[in-house]
Image (cartoon, rainbow, N blue to C red; front, side):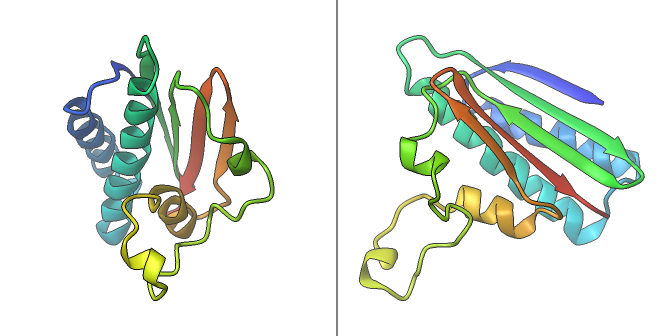
Length: 142
């Protein structure tokens, strides 16, 4: 298991991504495109966590865990931010990519992270959120 406990700093996202991807690569857990997927997913989840923490008066820490095994890699990223808006915890289809054909979709900036996580994860993404922070947990099979 790899555990990173980092201050909420944007420049540390690249460090976290490098450590997680290197561990998966050296352990021969993932290869090729799946390593690319892991790199993207680690960046998205860590960036979301950093941004959530920076949205608070006293930014907390970002905790990133990677469990490596024969079945692949399970990535968990937690923040100490304000939590997701109420609609994200309800029946909203946060796992669907925005419609980029619609005029409002062309002007959209952001909002692709969770849908990408859902799209690239081998199992359903677990999303736990409260006013104490958010945890995203996903699994990548080889």
